[in-house]
Length: 216
Image (cartoon, rainbow, N blue to C red):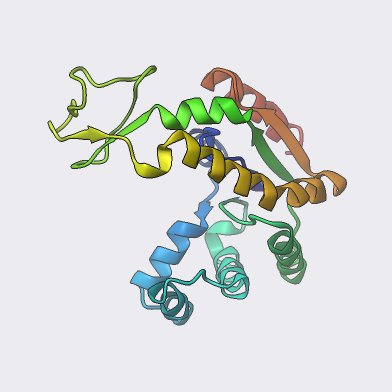
């Protein structure tokens, strides 16, 4: 199973990514994690990426795609993989297609978890995080037992600045602008499977499973 997982912030991708990786026994390749690991291991590509990050610049697509190619060439990807966080736009999608062509493989499916904007705003603006241990809560669905106090460590529970409703809306607008053409690209390629993400977690998982089983 070779797939790309797409979805806006707050779509619940993390939960579905864990399910997919465990069920199909394929590596979950997050570009963020991949970057951090390459930098920590002091690999040549990691050092190149770090030079951009240290200057406060975005790591160029060319560097990211070389990292992706290197990662997909590793033995644990022989029976499949799940890319999460890449591609983010049409140019990256085309670069990924070219890389997969070079490796002689193709995507089986692109799972796009779609969620209405206001549902995402509700989910993310209600999120609270412990400053000390990073435990996550939600004011409506999973509040701490005592307001603003972490159940696990007693640390302060707060709202991160990027979870402010206006900030969330801006993040969503940027995401939609970046990915609209990418989603259309995969739809035209016949590999896009859109899954509504504004349902119960188990219902979303069932739909994801149904879509994945259809291409096994």
